[in-house]
Image (cartoon, helix red, strand yellow):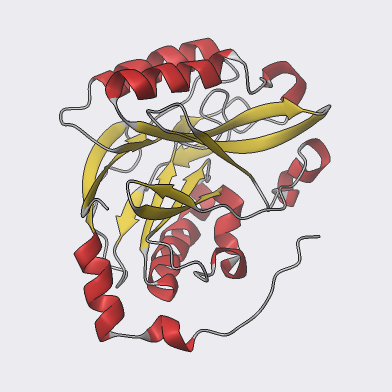
Length: 261
């Protein structure tokens, strides 16, 4: 088990529906990291922006972006996390990939599709919550709209870190701020949100507000809103264990079961 986990948050603009250029841009950002990290987190749909044009941007699990993630993870000795549009069995999904330096890939398909813009009409909803064990850290990766549904994120697996990758628009960013903090507090885990900045191809505006909260809901990151920026945050196991031992709130959690529709 590794006591500390160094996580790089990359808050970036995205080139609309241009996977090749986004890969170039993120290659530079990852290679320019000014210190060694264990994990780098990219926004939701980092190859395209949040698009409903699935057919024109979709890739396979053997496609260029997955190969790029594997190659760069190996080269930099770092795990890479982000979501993109994947076509599988003639269906499209908004799939988060957790790619380790070893080449191991764990994937999570977005459970809560964003009905406000008709995401459910284009993308197939995922059914399974995923926990990644990486360097002795239990990590729960989720995507954007999942943030509004605390039952899905409830810490029944004793995970250490909750991650949200997102394209969360500026008009609702106050909800993003509040919910990230809430998920950290109620689950007594680190909670990380990585959101994009800029304006996308349908004129939606994004202001970032990427952040890391500790188990008490204190923000421990300092990324600048509305700007492309990167920050490396060190997470510590002893912080989690100390406060879970002192405040045994998770011992009193409700027992329930989930049924994915």
